[in-house]
Image (tube, rainbow, N blue to C red; front, top):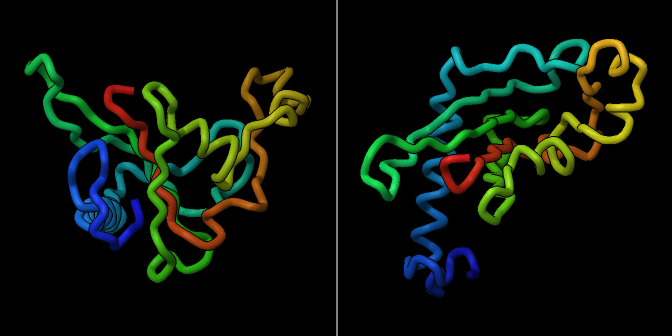
Length: 154
């Protein structure tokens, strides 16, 4: 689909403009409503202050197909390192059932990177905690990023 066009989203039969508006509104609501109790203050394997304000939590995903219980989406929100109030919001879904967006966040696009260096660091051998690396090419350099695990329950 082309954002802003009248082309329908194939899977849902919803105009992409409506779907884009819904996603953007939801993302901005999450950004504005980031409760202080969900702020991440430290990250295992990362030394020093975090590079950006980071929040982790759950949001409702409705009732499961069985009709019993409640499902939730897990998300991590990272403020832009540049201008959080004016920078765009990127909503990241890794895709495919069972493909956790947190994987993409920590090995591709986020400011905190897990790679072979995380395991080769001598601190890993003593603590058992992979050492988080800095990703100088993080998308948070220019945007707020919300990574959402989808579909629930992941």
